[in-house]
Image 1 (cartoon, rainbow, N blue to C red):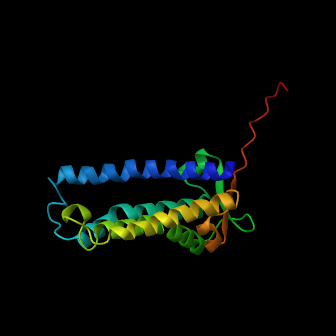
Image 2: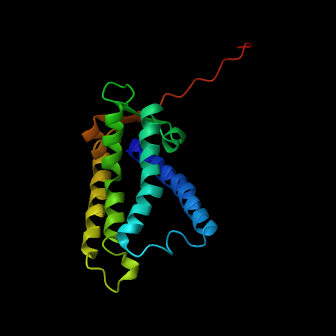
Image 3: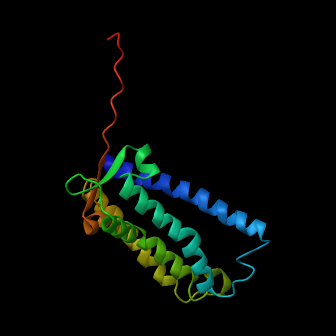
Length: 178
């Protein structure tokens, strides 16, 4: 159970870090351009493309590159976790891509449901409100699988052939006096 909680905390750290950076960049663009892109977008699909380009793509790249190249994201590093394949080796590009696609599926579905065909905030009563239960149910399923497998695997790990384990801590150097 402790590994499950560590993984959820690591994901939370990554989420907060990414949100601060990416929302900060979006706000900077908005301020520097006096309202772009929202003063020019008329349809939900336009906002969805903006979200894909400025939020989803950087987040996908962050997870794929960090887990493929370093076996960890900033959150996993902070909580001493690493991603490996079933043999304990680095994951390959296909595994990193599959893992990220499945993990972020609820997030991407939420964007699409809220923004397309028209953003919920621009219509009196969105017709697809019930669809928001799908990504929420997926999140609950992912978390249940994580706890069921004692933190080693969630749905995205099983489908990608990966697992998350504790990273070995480097032993501090011995002093010469000892």
